[in-house]
Image 1 (cartoon, each protein chain N blue to C red):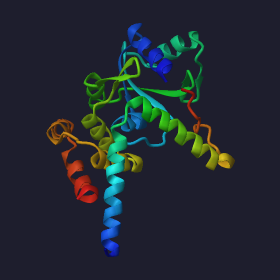
Image 2: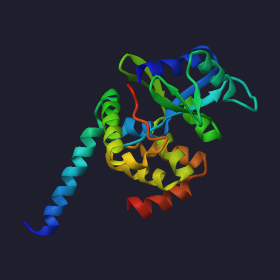
Image 3: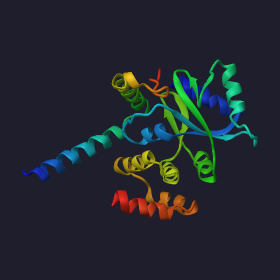
Length: 57
Length: 167
């Protein structure tokens, strides 16, 4: 398998995964969103913006 | 979030607003994989024509203990931004919004094709990114989309966008 094929396979797998995630229930997506907000807060601790509030759901 | 959506629905039930729908990043998230966003944007049709359309909303929410903070109102742990429908496209998108369930709560989200049309009209960098995402991850009804775009004179912009980013 050459480099191009490997890359193509990875991209295809990523696209498939995103499509699967897009089918999750709304409520589950909001739970994931809150996890993303918490992760981002950890990264942005020193430059936190007022609007970067983690939701309490 | 359920409590937040219940409070928002209460605005319609109490006739403080005529209609509403979730828009912006959360509407995109409803259709795509979860993406980072911090606001819950609520597009609404005011109950009556007046200059300060936000005032009755804020007054009602203040009575319930939810105070505005800059452009948001923090409702049950979620910063909510109320955006009055600012043109015919957005008004029609709210009227035609999708009825969805969040757990046990019934709410409304801007329909997928209207969402694309609105983002195409607003056309910020993040809107363009979100449109690409929507086309990659969802099944946009092109017939419905083109009907909306034609009606609101956005076909030219869509064609350019399509050849530049979705080609």
